[in-house]
Figure 1 (cartoon, helix red, strand yellow):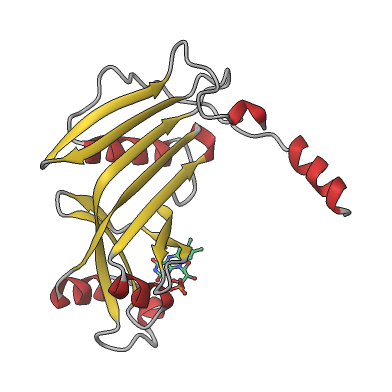
Figure 2: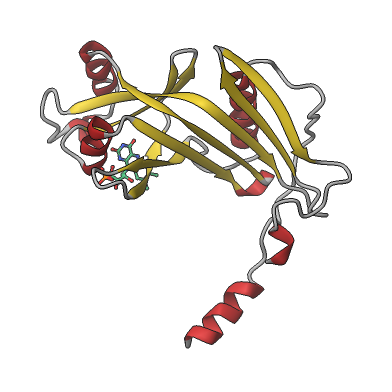
Amino acid sequence: METDNFAHWLRAQPSLVGSAPPFDPTALPSDPNELFRTWLVEAAGAGVPEPHAATLSTVDLTGKPDARTLILKDVGSRGWAVAGLRSSAKGAQLTANPVAALNFWWQPIVRAVRVRGSVREATREESATDLAARSMSARSGVEPGDWVLWRVEPVYMEFWQGAPDRRHTRVVYDRAGGTWKQSQIGGEGAIDRFGEASH
Ligand SMILES: Cc1cc2nc3c(=O)[nH]c(=O)nc-3n(C[C@H](O)[C@H](O)[C@H](O)COP(=O)(O)O)c2cc1C
């Protein structure tokens, strides 16, 4: 397909065509982890395949961004856990620049979640426990000590609920001074605040 035709074809692809479950942004939990767990369970319930798969973005030694898909292992007060090889590109990047972002997109329910924070390596025992919990085939070839569990410690979380009429809602939790501050952009009466309608 020619470039022009491809751009035309892309523009014709439908977007934001899922069906949003009920969401009341005026009744938010003070702990954003709680909202995330609710949304993840709702995504699974709505049939989203592998809703715990996320894009993990990191920064390399020269300041260039990088990203790949990972499986989320846990969400709790100590952070959001992911795991992989220390000897991988992400392993080197997280050692040099222990910061990361996670992004989830659950198309059938028109929801996305975005998280930013610093990254802390779990203890050797926790990493070993995570490796032990993997299937035999997933463990094979992994050298002892090379499997690492990392926790992203969020300072920013964004919950995005798309709407067919483009009155999208974006709920932001910002961590300052050890507490979460909520704010909301969009929702009723706010159209095209983020430019999506220009697709
Ligand atoms: C659905 C899915 C889940 C994945 N889960 C993981 C994971 O949990 N850990 C991991 O290291 N790689 C996982 N991968 C592979 C990574 O996307 C990536 O290819 C690999 O980690 C190497 O990335 P790097 O070179 O940036 O370190 C997954 C890939 C897909 C498509």
